[in-house]
Length: 420
Image (tube, one colour):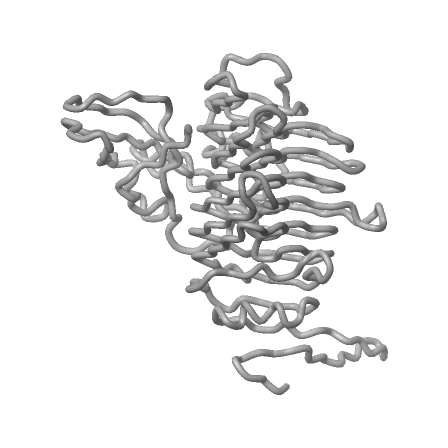
C-alpha cells in the first residue's frame, strides 16, 4: 500500500477474497494535523480517522453545504478537536460540517469551541458544532464541552437541524452523546443537542449546559430538542441537567411539537432547572403540569441522581456503563462524583462553571458566599471578601471534593453568569 503525502491514505481500495467473492473495502484516510482535517473539503465522500488530538490555530470554514454536502465518515477514534472558531455574520448551515447527507461521525470530542452564524435579524439558520444541517446522519459516542454556539434559528450544540431524506426510511440518529456549554439563538429555535428535527432518533444522551432563545414571543427552547417537525421523531432515555432554559415556549426535554410528531420515552429533567418564558425565572421544582417520563418536560429527578449507578440501574438500564459510558462515583465521603463521560475519554475531565444558582445583587464593601453550577455536577462555593468595585471579581473556595484526579481538574478562577 502506498502512503501519500502528509500520511494520507487517499481512496485506496483493498481487494479481499472471501468464499471466492471479491469485495472492495475503502481504506480510511489518516488525519494527524489541522491541514489534513481541513483537506476533508477536497473529498466529501471520503472515510477519515483521527490519529491524535488536534488543536486548531485559525478560523474554521464549514465543510460541505446544501448543494455539495459531506457524505463520508469521520471516526474521531477517541480523540478531541480543540479551539474550533467560526464567525460567519451572513452564514447559514454552520458547523465543522455545514451540511451533511447520510454521513457518520463517531467517537469525537470538541472542547473550547466558539461558533457563531448570522446576525440578530438575518441568516444564522442551522448552527451547530458538529453539523449545521444534516439529512440521514449518524452521530454516536461524541461530546462537546466548554463551548458557546450562537445563531438565529435552529441552533444547538451538536446539530443545528435535521431534514427529512428523500426516502422516509432514511433517518437521522444521535446516540450516546452529551454536551455541556452555552447555546444561544438570537430569535427562534434553540435546543440543547438539536435545534429542529425531522425523522430523527435521539437515544441515551444528556445535556448539562444552558439554552437561551432571546426572542421570547415566538421561540421554542428545549433541553434536548427545540422543535419536532417532519414525520416521527423520538427521544428516549435522555437526561437534562440544565441549570437554565429560556424562550417563548420552554420544555425541559423538548420545546414544541410542530408539524411533525414526537415520541417521548423514559426521559428525565432536573427539578433544579430554572426556566424563563418572558416572565422571569421560575423553578421547575414548583411545577406539576406536563411532568412525566414521556412528557415534553420529562420526569422530575435530582441532579445528584445521574452521578449514582443505582439511578442508571433502575431508571436507565439501557445505558451501557461498561463499554460506552463510565461513571466516576463517590471516591469517599468528600468526593461528590461527576456526570457520566464516554468510556473512550482519557485523562482528566475538563470542567468549568456554568453559572450561579440565583440572581444576586452585590454591594460594594460587602462579603458574599454562594454556590454555583458546575459543568459536570460539581458543587462549587464562591467567596469574596470586601467587594471594592462595580465589576465583581470572584475567587473560589475549592472543597476537598475537587481533589480527585480522575474526576476533575482545577477550575478557572472566574465565574460565568448564565442569566441575562
